[in-house]
Length: 375
Ligand SMILES: [Zn+2]
Image 1 (tube, rainbow, N blue to C red):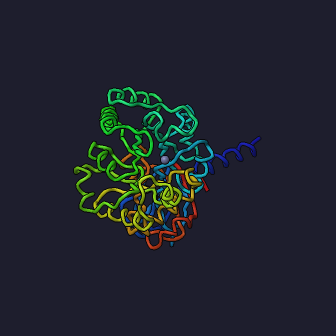
Image 2: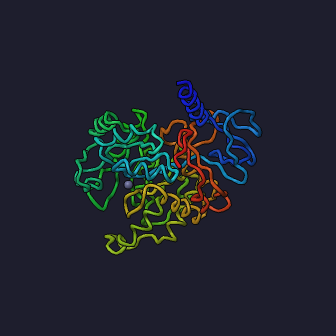
Image 3: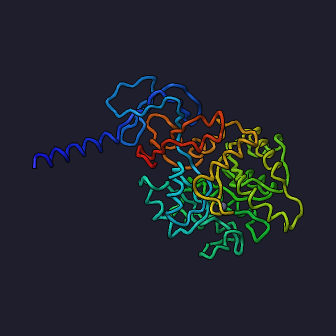
């Protein structure tokens, strides 16, 4: 009996100590900047101290030669099942932002937020679209609207269904919402303290929705190059973001180019040039890949998007921000996306620096979510 008690006590002690660890002598990207040879203490899933040296009885993880950064957020997914959340978590993507889905299934996916093996799922619920518009073709019931007078009711319904933010679709190659209705939706979302983000595919629509106060665009336009100077006038001095989804565009556009009703679309190189001009205009860039569109996965394919942003000329430090601290600036992701005291210990320990070479983002030694090892 005594031996059993001792064994139980030992087990308890090891469980408790697993909740407390310090990573020493590591290079840290905290979501903003990089600091060399520093220590990070994690207790009960939270980062509690960051200092040159930390005196503690916690388990030590030697970070010598390694790179510690916040775990990743994929800002544009369509998660149809829990498996998507597992695939994301395994790749170090601990937050995913769903941009149009089945509201009835989303409550269950959101409830997995505290489980180590699943990425936290944040949702827009059903996107706002016109009857017969983009988003209505997937075979599940999708609410639609037409007039600005319907905007307030539409937004209230999404919030009642659990939406964390609002997604709106402007896609003129099908039936689509008028800019008057889009403006009313954005205003109604903001009145309820929710961000409003918009799907566009044409530059003209991008300009209009940003002028109407949209917080961000969840794709880049495909039709024409917009100069840095022009872009600077679009945001009306308000912080806003553009999510280029370059990987999605480069996989989907070859098919669309053949049947494009309006002829020419930007080439892959021009899309990359456009992303650099967006960066030069001071507009925030967010990383998203839009899985499962074009066969893109929920996990490791996000590394490809980061690589494309880097190739486009966005500095690697800013590329890392696009999938860590910047998503948390625009979406209600709680205390995630940064390695700072008081933040959740959602972290990646890499074997080499992705600032030196963005490919190192895939060279992962450990993934933690809430201070617990995912892998
Ligand atoms: Zn999408």
